[in-house]
Image (cartoon, rainbow, N blue to C red; front, top):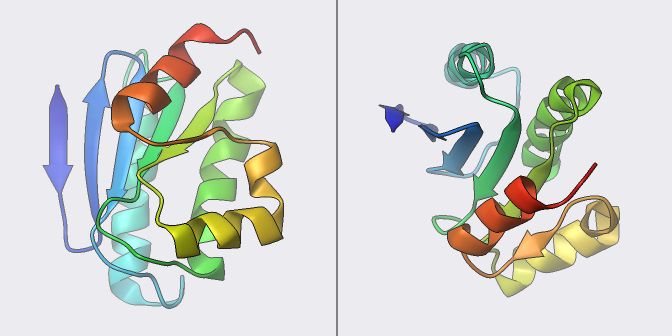
Length: 125
C-alpha cells in the first residue's frame, strides 16, 4: 500500500483504489497549500492500476463546497475509465450535505472503509 501524508489529505493506494482522507476542512481551492496537495492527489491517479476512489471522512464532521468540488473533479477524471467513487465514515452533518447536493444519488455513502472498498470493487459500471 502506497501512502502519502500531507497537511490536507492523506492519500493511500490499495490495489486499484485511491483512498483520500481529508485531514481538515477545505476553505478554498485558491489556497496555495490546497492547490499543491491537489496536484499530489491527481498525480496519484496516474499510478498504474488506480481506477477507483474512496473518500474517507472519519476526520471531518462537516465539509463545504470546496470538498464537494474536489470529489466531483476526481470522479470526472475516473469515470471515463469505468472508475467508481464511494464515500465512507460520513458524519450526520456531512451526510446531510451530500443529500442536499444530491451527490448521495451518484456515489454510495458507506458506514466503513471496508464497505466503500467493496462498493467500488464489486459493482459493474
